[in-house]
Image 1 (cartoon, each protein chain N blue to C red):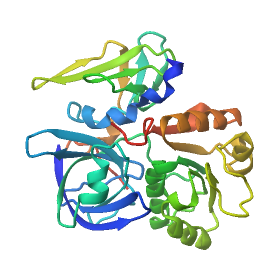
Image 2 (spheres, helix red, strand yellow):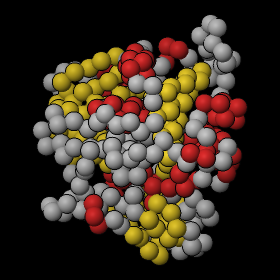
Image 3 (cartoon, one colour):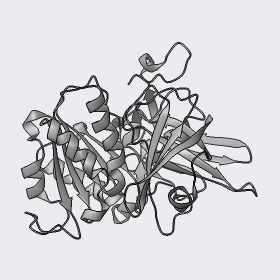
Length: 243
Length: 102
């Protein structure tokens, strides 16, 4: 079933990522971690469907935020990040998915591992936790290309300043800030050992990002003692834009 | 298959298309592979979309669990690789839709 969402706000997060706030009058509510399918239809009838994670926490205002990363060769993302305007309408299907979700009733330690735009559904979980005043202990390991590509940086800072049970580690893969304790590079066993929950606490792990990132991060979590049954993954494919 | 690790997504990514067919969210359901007997969430299957439709494969033995092709106003669904699918009916609301509790 396709719904219609009206764009009510646009916000550029980085040079290539934009958050689109949609008002969906018949939105049934969602759970943090779910996604929507967006359908664009050209005047000749050609249509393209892409999946985007919901960035916003569940709310009663029937507002849905999507953060979209522009891909140079993308068919849909250039339109969503450059051309769309406030009061435009988009076709949506969702909310979708009942597995890669965090519910506010969950009280166990949560380990979030995000690569690039894989941060989006993870952000919905962090926002949902804050909104529900949950005290579930959260740790986030956020792998990102360079400082300029970090999404939601100020909000993360504010949230972790006021709540010490939310702990955030950035891992820069190509360019790290000056004086950063760890040189730029992919996440590895040492980083997993030093920054994620010890496996004996039996955290539920959520891993989201490009397929190769999810593969290696899941492998490292399992190697450090986490039971594969406790790891939930969401792969975005090779490029980060789901087909 | 292992040389193409970037070529697949999770079963999660099929949720939108499957919602056209099933009243409940199939990706959170538990299914058994007809080939190796592994019992997993459908969301954990490997999903290949470089085809006219999509193919979900068992994450343990890589055998086909499900295929779906949409063509000429028809959906062709092949479930031969799943011997059983266990759905959590507590998630069905009175209206018969997947219920969302924030």
